[in-house]
Length: 465
Image 1 (tube, rainbow, N blue to C red):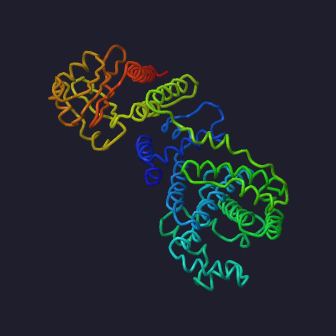
Image 2: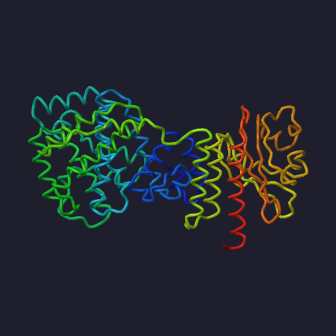
Image 3: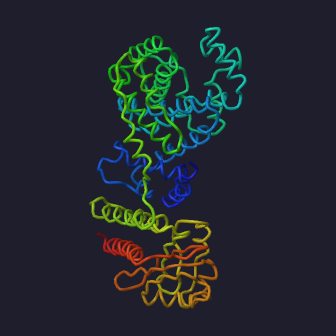
């Protein structure tokens, strides 16, 4: 979040942060490959490519929603039910935003996810008081605001908004926590429209999943009558929205290996809408979710190489930095190296300097990686002679005493010179700290192909094409 808010942060820095989080990387790629974002039908397996295509605001919103999901979803059963409500509300908000022609649907998803934060916090950290509130609603027939005021002396949304301010999150998240009754029959700004979308979606979730069927139907009629025209959502369109959000939530729960009762929720939709839904066929979808989104080992490297090749041939104009980052990620994730560095020589070809990279302690390495080529020993000879180098065990090899290897202390390393117009301009350096490279012939060929792509792009940029 901090990196995405920093105008000076680089694409590489944001990507490196994402790659360190398995859940964020997975969610990002799932989002990028959804029908809404990926209209080409060609799978996107590169995190850096997804960042380029989605933009940093969407990345920030995804990070926030994942933070909330992972914080609460494995708590007590009652809290997990509220977390499910948050997911459903988030999906409702995204689809309502699409219907309402609100341009930033992932922003609506984020606001929907946080809309029930106050109740989540009370249920998690004040379970006794939360039980009293539920009892007052059930036994004394109090409305939720009255029960909250009696037990807590404040409303759920008051706590949620206070925490949003305390965490210094965007004000638009807090604005959507207002109760739907506080909204009028029109919106004057995009911010007001987003707040209405969020509150409408939260009210819709409660009507379907928390109220008795008759009361829920009346609530849905109220929502569509008062706000349907503002949001371009009529009652007959709600059933489609509700059914499709179950697919979204099911996918998220499956990714977290948490059971999801699709049939029971579908029946609640049926009762609330007063319609008959066919029993969902979930077995095929669930089987598909069990399959990994990203392949592993050699297959993964091949897939990333194919994606980069297709991107370069697509006609879309990518900057050199964007192409470089996709290639570095293919080395880092596709071949599972600990560190990958893009290095250039100076104009006199006497010094080798790291410019960017991915992996462990990479920011420090970029600052410290500055070596005279003459001091690199056999590494320097390999570089200047344009020799691709793969070393499985540095210890005892003729490379072990070069300044570069002494400073980085890898167990194994590789170096692919970058040759443009017959001149060595730098190299791609990669290593493992505690294991051998263990690359077979095909993996080495794929890494060399990635390097060749980079050289071709650099050469084209030098020509101005």
